[in-house]
Length: 490
Ligand code: GLN
Image (tube, rainbow, N blue to C red; front, side):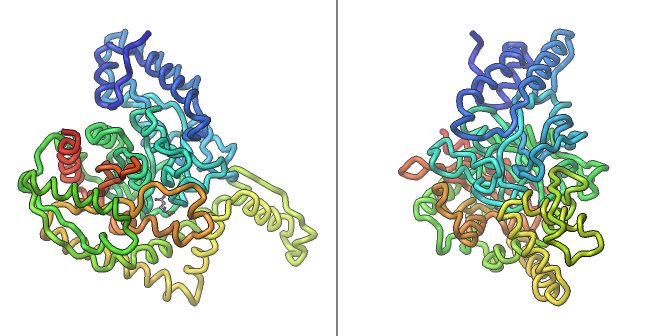
């Protein structure tokens, strides 16, 4: 049969570029892998079989013509189902969009295609990216390959599972408050949230627009850097994308940590942190120090307000963004019962349709957030909640600015616990929200942050080390991540 498919995207691209592996062989092996494992793990919501095989054939033909292949040649990349794909349904794991087929590709999807990646399909997630466990999917949760009774994290759980289980060497997710980093930590892979504005959000179904950012998952740091270098860059279609040069993230990999100043925020080693997670992260920090980094305490005093702040800002933005799902413009339409809604003499049928559509189309968590977000924005409460949250957000950002006056990067846990059991937190939204306590601050501050694996627990559950860098200093973040990866594996 065919040669083994390398698990690292960078190695795989090399083999396809050199012709040692055909893209078709990679595509067929990927489909076989998905067929074998997807029923159990529920990572993919849509497998675009025919499109994948056609892409692979076109790529092999391109190579046969003597053309040079792109930096992700033949690398299968799974796409979170919040990214619009032309001609392929994009559900956001919601009944509202269960049969929505976008007429265009998100900018990141177009860029992956231009880099000769293969796109096998769309992955499971929490509905509209709201959640930390994938249990808010209208299509059932994705499952953690390390223990299928446990969550892979969320909201980009399916993308993390695709990579962690070996279905694809890389994937894209979106991270609003931790949705790339937390599932990467819980499944034992690398997950990167770039600086806000580094990657175009055009074609990402919006959740909270001042926080949403697209980023890669991969089995290793260098491959994540490669994928980021392909998807990053200014885009005229997203006015929040930044006009800055795309740094060489891969060149930052493979350097030593010697001389780096690393901050450790004491506030992140607080109540609620699992002792095994703490031990694993502290051991990683000790190793970085032994390898020549300087470790310094830093203070991020407003961290304790991050969860409250995030759940005001994010729900406010979500309530506005999700107003577009009204049964007219996108997806589901359910005609309501006009008689029951008779108080609306004028436009009764229309109002009944809006109500019935949104009631049937959205799940419980999405409704909870629309209600909360509408409340914090309403006249009389706006100053007390939304405006106050914006001010606290500024204080959180300033904490980081002060810390980065002394250190090059900050390290801390990604998630307070290893993967928890499915069902464990579904009846208590607050305990679910607390699983984002360490990822939310960097999101509110717009900073680049990533999760890399550190030593697993005794039971073999993965643990993630979070690295946070100053805005646009992804190269610093990758340098540290790669040095740690080498130390851990060496
Ligand atoms: N878990 C967080 C939430 O539920 C973050 C989600 C995300 O980053 N999309 O909002």
